[in-house]
Image: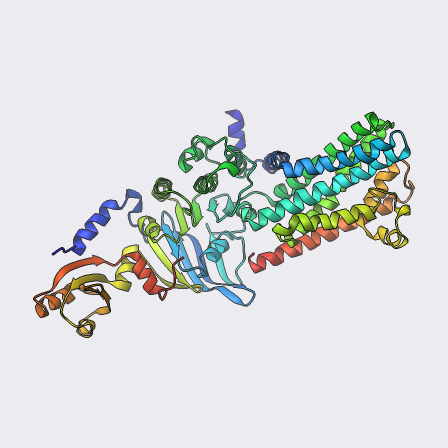
Length: 323
Length: 260
């Protein structure tokens, strides 16, 4: 009989939390906001009445299925498109203002970069746009580009190109960084290194907004997760809060009790058969456990754990594909 | 060290200029290293001159073609260097990344114009060198300088046309569509053969083409076109520039509204 107690799970979680991912101060000032923003493309509304706040020193992950409005939200905050209604403010200014842009770094989804320039040439060019750029060597170090500075972009692997794009986002020593799907195509060591850098940014008081398809990434990095669906905010909270609020905890066990009986237990939200066992989602797992053990002395194979963020996400977005 | 401290002064008035220079430096490097561009844009006028100019060594044709192929160089350098390259950058998301940075738009656009003008200048220099050696013709320094000036100024209207093409053309179809625009224009405007040898209906149509006016200005340097009426030709090119810039701007704003 194996029992993974929630407390043990929480302890192991807190061990993996880096120093930089300590909860951000809630009262810190807002560095970027969307206020009731609406954006239409033709007749489709990509964003409908979205409110979003990013505070100083905070890492916020935007999650949502394709077409949820994540990239549109980032493009609005970068001033690449203007809202049809509502207000966008970045560092107290309109995001189109040059004064705002010199304090912002952006990593966007770029299908191909100009391949004929060398890595260090791209860095030098982007550094020239900013009045107080980071030293080129620092950009190379932080983005993990050592040894490939003199390679053409066309010769790099997909993951290496992503690292170059991350480096370009850092060139201006920005206070606010937007990362749109940053770790796509990166191998595991590169991804871990990127995560460390993102945590470093937050620890230095910078703010980061990232969109990602990797729920693991949101879980590992974000102080706050914002789930979007069809251009609206579905819910927001710390990764743990989201898991808890949506799925509560997950109990797996082999029991003689009928699924109907299990569903009738207090706070149970879902019951699923999983081979010889059942999986029960419950908000108050302890209460359900007491009843289960009482009613079925033969109960065995018990496991209790916090539902993964992925479950919460699928539950929230109606089980759509999370790609 | 001292240059570094200068570089970080916030009210540095030379900063936009420095960005323009850096942007131009790398735009030129990029175009030169893109062999498909540099070899074809410089190579075609050179190859044509070796075939048709040198074959008519010492004859007026050998001089006429210097002016005609110089115009061809200007137009192709701009349409491929801006139209095609920018269409790709736009479709691949690179333009968005540049726009999200504090890079001044003027530096970005200016660098592209200057780079294409530089290519046009290279083409003129190579043609003049070929003409005076293998072509067996005489070109005065004043004529060469005038042709270089025309190539530089002529780059502006066709760079503007390149911007419009960049925002209109689907990038995959880019090379084909640009050839479909540029080859008929070259033929109908007297780049290859004098307009008076063309079919009558083309002769009537030619003055409606911006390339015709560029050709008239260049041909007048060697006396193949009337020296009078230059003001009209320049005015047409100026009007064409305004039209192209406005159309490119509107197209760009529209594509932005669609979010593509």
